Length: 205
Length: 142
Image (cartoon, rainbow over all chains, first blue to last red; front, side, top):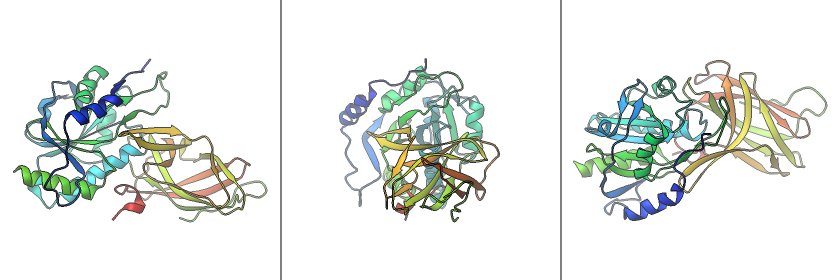
């Protein structure tokens, strides 16, 4: 019933990465947690909703930096761990308001049937006002996952069943022009992510 | 944080040491939570973990997460065999207890009783505390 998602994109993920010609930032003093794209990758239109029921599309990336992570609220292990890591990134930037202000953290649920905006509101509120919970139907989700080379897959399940959702574990960073700027492929360490973000921002300004 | 060997029936102690049981802090809206601990089989023979229970959750299962080709996947572990002398660590991104449908809100600091169920019918009672998730695996945190 719900067999959806970016089927066949496992191969696409590799292809996309190769085609971007991704190389580590040449002037990094140490190996960066971020894979910075040679140029921001423009993402086309997509139509999702946030935890308040407001439209969330590519325009919501504009004018700020955005960390984005795919997951689902019934995910006990990887998702809360990644969310906690992002919260730590935010906290590590607390002393640098030029970096912290205007940075948002976007949790995209790839499990829209269980993750209604109401459910997402309660979930992201735990992490802070700069966290946004977003979801939408599969067609719109894939308008976002496809250009990112991200994928997800839900098993076929009846209503009310407990199921796990496979999802790309990377954290994506968007720049204020709305383009994909970098990918954090993990494992995710808050300190390393904050350091890479700092280098990106200092280099970009 | 010590595991207490108890439970009804004979030979209640399966001879598996439980270390550092904890639950990851998570939003109250999360209907599924993760529990972590370490197990060390000091019984001198194989022990097989087949389940877990908690009075604070409708159901507890054993699961394993892994990230393969950049994709996070989670699968149930119906039986986890520990050879004599073997240790297994349940930690973020790997083995974990998956606790479903909490009966009450569990904030950081809360205590959660959990019982591990072994294939031979023995049971291990422990109490896990709800703690903030550290970045990455606890053992690799700096």
